Length: 217
Image 1 (cartoon, one colour):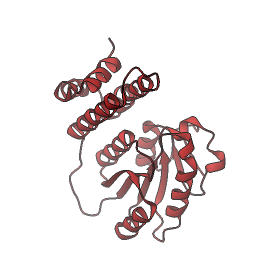
Image 2 (image 1 turned 90 degrees about the horizontal axis):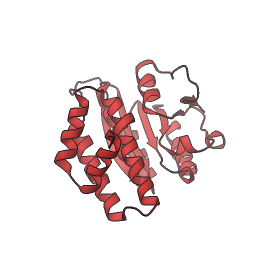
Image 3 (image 1 turned 180 degrees about the vertical axis):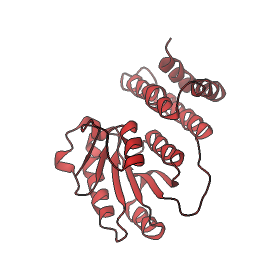
Image 4 (image 1 turned 120 degrees about the vertical axis):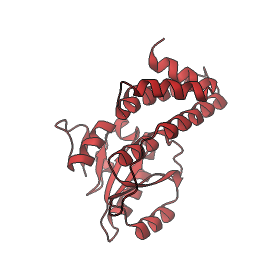
């Protein structure tokens, strides 16, 4: 049984402590980014595929997601709170229930020294705009899991690009890897297709040499 299968089975069985121990052992020889890209994300994708094939129940899928969230929260690397840090607001639009990827993104921004407001999934646009107007984040990161969520992501992104303080709007999640994003692109928004591209953007303000991983509308 490989690492991805083993972790996904621990998630499905609700084995919080064993899953946490497994992940902490993995982190002894891997980075947090490798944990997310090579272990946690594939494990959750496998669980999603099992659910689609009716091999696990909705209850088991929800249990697995809860255990995954617990493990990510317990292993998250948080930067110390310093005045004057750049700020990132991270969430998914109303109707979007997936949030594991959001937590990975929030953890990465914290690792890189940002102050983070992680708002989770299913956030109404008016509420998100109100918080952004008040807190004035440098970055607003949006995520969608399914291709049919792209029109909603576009609506949210357009709204945030119009804020007076001019935050950078990032759009990511599985949705932007599944579809041709062309008709949903938003002028000034940055499309991020995987965590490595996000890390590169945070550190340099631009993408890697592979243009397929990051682009601007």
